[in-house]
Length: 227
Image 1 (cartoon, helix red, strand yellow):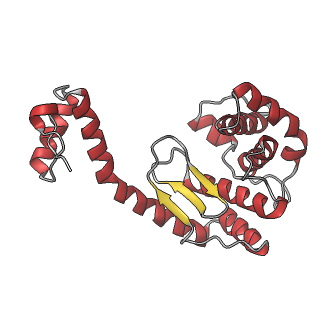
Image 2 (tube, rainbow, N blue to C red):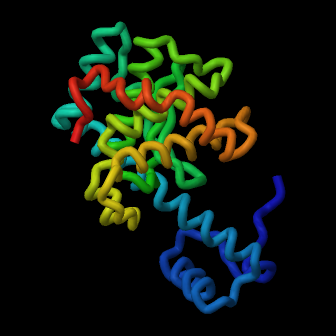
Image 3 (cartoon, rainbow, N blue to C red):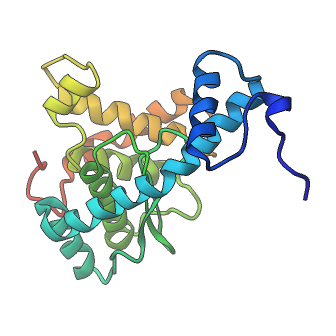
């Protein structure tokens, strides 16, 4: 295996020495690294913080499983359907993009340690997907876009991620009338558009609109939308 480029090539030096790491940082912020050196610096920084980020995510996950009312409620409803979510299959990982998490029916829930959203919302969102898979046999295998749109509508609506104050303070969405519905529709459309078999955001919006009335009105397993 070849050795990584040294400081003479990129301006960046691979090291665990605190002084040389500070020198790397100085070179980075003052523009003394090459483009490859900048990439090496960012990767090294991310690698150093990965373990701490995952540990923080795992601690929050464990707390939510024990104390969060909405997470505990969804956990019980999933157990009632024969599901089994626990620390072993709710995993924290570093992600390369801005996603918050994901669900695979065979492997469990992935939570992004560098997530942009509050962990409680993300975990509840994925638990709604898990509930839908068990209760309604949502088709994750063939990527049916109508199934995808329905479960994304329900997950965004029921998880709490579209609360008024979340939209107002964190996403600069200041409209008061129909704020919740517009948030749910926007986020569901973005999620469907990201599916490999969705052509574009126009098709995603069309599918979301087709299933909107029935899926938005369905609040199971809650009696009403959680706020």
